[in-house]
Image (cartoon, rainbow, N blue to C red):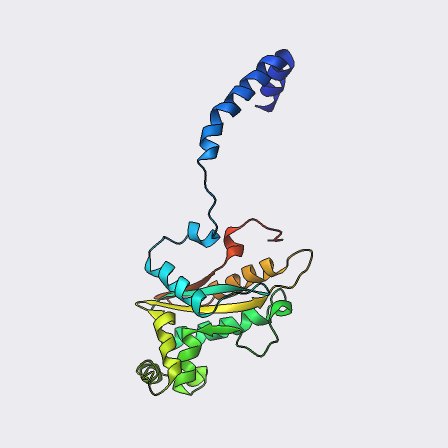
Length: 215
């Protein structure tokens, strides 16, 4: 194909240039109608869907700043199973210890990971290893009037879906390694063994934007 095109340009250079110019001019009206999606995730998460609303609520509850970025955890299926909760918590800890992620873990004393799974364990007042189905039911039944933390379930837990957030610091490095860090978080969480009835992954702008990632 390239040889044919080179032969065409060599044989009739001005005619080829004129044709290309005409094609370009013909495409200009279409270019004027194009729009840019300001939110990269908006191109992949259906507008108005339950997932879109849940992610919007989570971002509103835990907003990003110029110094931080985040990956939204999305678990699907039987997300309140003790095994799934244990695996999600373990995977989030593994993600923070990952060599590409550790340099970007904030040291500001605030929780780095917030999720429905962590909230269930906190309200059950047991370790993940000790968590039982009865502990899960007890945590989910907690009245926000008795423990205000339970109000978080409204943003973090839906029908067959659980949400969370991993917060990372945007260190101003030439290679913007936090893009790779966000991708590494997703790789670790997505690779978890959640059984046949559940899965988990993350959503972040790093998954939907071309950048300086080395992956």
